[in-house]
Amino acid sequence: MKNIPENSLIARLSRSKKLRRGTGALLFTLLVVLCAVAATLLADDIESRHAFSLDLSFNEQTVQSTVTNSMLSKLDKDVHVYMLTSGTSEYDTLYNEDDTLRTLLERYSAKSTRFTYSQERLIDNPTLASRYSDAFGQVQVSNDCLIVYCL
Amino acid sequence: MLSILKREIQGYIYTPTGYVFLGVFLLLSGVCYAILNLAARSSNMLYTLEYMGYLWMLLCPVLVMRLFAGEQYRHTDKLLSSSPLPITAIVLGKFFAACIVMLCSVAVSFVYPLLTAVYGKLYLAETLAAYTGFVLQGIAFIAMDLFISTLSHNQFTAAISCIGVNLFFWLADLVSEAFGSALIERIFTFISLYRRSSDFSMGRISFSNCVFYIVFTIVMLFLCVRILDGRRWHES
Image (tube, chains in turn red, orange):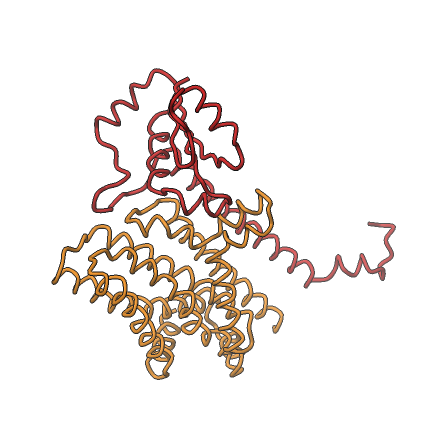
């Protein structure tokens, strides 16, 4: 800093009270926004891991019975469920398939570490259907199917 | 804060803004109720509340546009910025005033489930879950529109900007389709207020969605405070 002349632009900017305060305020704002995003991501993660949601629907669509919970806790093999959807876009995948079913699978995976699921669009992964159609013989796997795969 | 709250509540009572908000809200929510419940002979309030959520997008700007943009238009913002009140108290006072008017309209809308309960079978728990999401959405929209109101110098500019931004945040996940990038899709889906409301519309209270709405509201109020604080400092 000793080599910078006192009247140069950099020296004047470094002395500028407005610039220092503005930079500080901007950094502080960015920090708060980042903390907020982190908190929300953490909440999303906690919910998907521990199924932190309260189902008050009249038929309790996504509530598991004690039998289901007991079966999930006793799983001795890894189970993966492919949820095949017919949507051609992310929007279709999000809204046109059964949201309740997805929530139910999410809750199953939260209850047992051996249970996992993934959503697959046949348009993105066409070999998946043919692979399991061959494996099941007579059964034709198509859109809007669930494939339960025990590893 | 209480003095600002009282002043703004009086503002809603002595000017047509509050009545216009309440009247249009009840008219449009009544139309939703008539179509989805009365005409369809259904006691399911979830769809009605889901459609009523769209009303916040259009009506919250009406409620909020005068709070800061109106002050700037009338040049009374100078009085506020030179007052000894902390900026946070001013923002919170105005925010809570708008929330109180909104909650009054929500309270009046309880007449719909009440009518359903009298003439049919109402599932109270799921209706309350949907109402929770409905109120959280309204509060988030008010906070966001309040922030936009601080950026505008004219009430009508504020209202139009608010409607545009509300529409964007409501349908952000649809906009993401245009970009074709997985990261952008993820970001837009994350901030989409519509996506966040879908669980409530099925009678589920989701922890992460509640956290999102609360954090979103706090961030928007914080941004309001930063804008006004910067303006006060600049003027001084």
